Length: 396
Image (cartoon, rainbow, N blue to C red; front, side, top):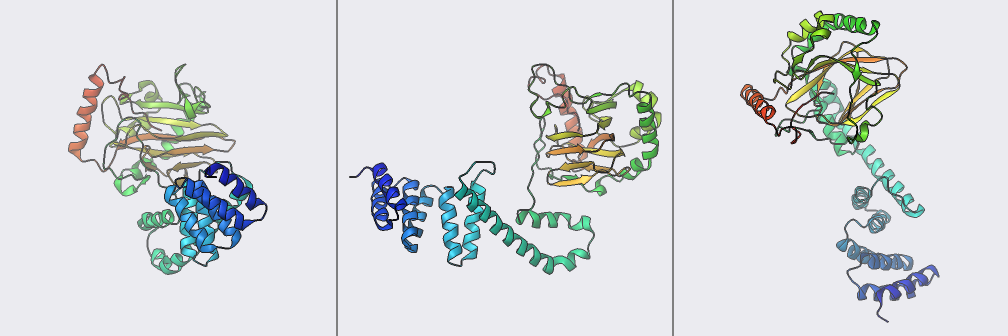
């Protein structure tokens, strides 16, 4: 008989019956009949394992993985083989390959699921040991530096240890190449942040006056028309859970709101904001209602930087950009790249309020900014720019 499927079935039956020698013979014939099948080589490896033939098991697993390097069961068996032989380095390498090749949300049988759990535990143990060693070797040097001066290095270590994911910019409208993908940008790029922060009491008081008068003019920030795909915005679409009141929208001053917040308007007019006619600056009060969540999303373009000035922040609110989550602190402004995935939470029973503004990406030169102003003006003058999705930047 030369039918590989029939030989495989008979071999597995012999294996279940405890006759490993017959299983090896049958499964070897099956693999020889169909040498391009990684499953047949894996089954043969299983039979060799049952018979205690370690070298033959390794050879059959190598044959399976040569055909399909992402074959999870073969990767698990190979890792266990290395672990049993005391080769911790090779075992961890295969456990890591196994975890990388296996979708985290896929359903598995109990045996393979247990193998995955063991793989995770082994990889985590190695990572913890390496982290401890790095802390012992590098801790004194790191402790002697300012945290902001070593942040990138510490994130580098955490990425290497698998503790931190890497997020890349994903602009929805305009991608400017080769700008540094900084999640939270260093304050040194924005010397005027201190001026903005000093005005926090004034700005908060004018916002509070708007709220005390009934909050007229605040509207849902997310407002897709009927029939548009809302995706992750279904819960917030046309909802006041996340609402906004604009002082400047796409570069156009909102005179009625500015008249009610004259000192805030004066502060905004004194700052070097994103002066791109028809696109910016943008400045608005952003309200996040109690027990609300702004889901992960990305912004329109990396030619500008978004700045948050927290005004009313109940304890427990948080904001994530990429792989870093921070609390808002009232009166402490920060700048971030909104083309990197970000999200926000207000799990409290009180209102959260932030002033959101935009400015130029500090890595752009003045000639680049002028070219971008003219580029956007040309795009906006075209009757087809809307169809190309090139109009409007927004901010979040």
